[in-house]
Image (tube, rainbow, N blue to C red; front, top):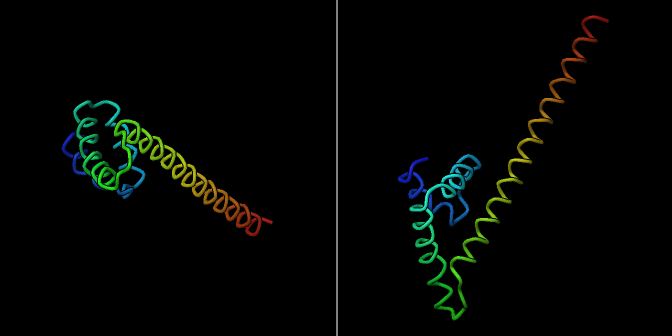
Amino acid sequence: MDCKEFNGLIHDFLNDRLNETELSEFLAHIESCDNCRDELRIQYLIYEGLERLEAGDTFDVDRDLADVMKLQKKRLDKRMGIKMAAIASEIITISAFVIVLFLVLFY
């Protein structure tokens, strides 16, 4: 993912609208790109900070954004775990079908 693609996904990231592939690439890119990390920080400040400040709530952009990043990483891990479980289930179902077919045809 390049910086232009990353910037185009910030809004979707902040609204939790990225699929597993996009989220994985987004999180990997932010780990390696200081410019995009700064841009995300600015967008998060605008997106979340202004609303909180208007409501009179305290806001620590760095801490709160770090919390969002941790939550997104956990969600990605959970999504990938569910996806892997679904794939394993499909493999077991297909294997069982093949075994039953083999038994029916050859016994």
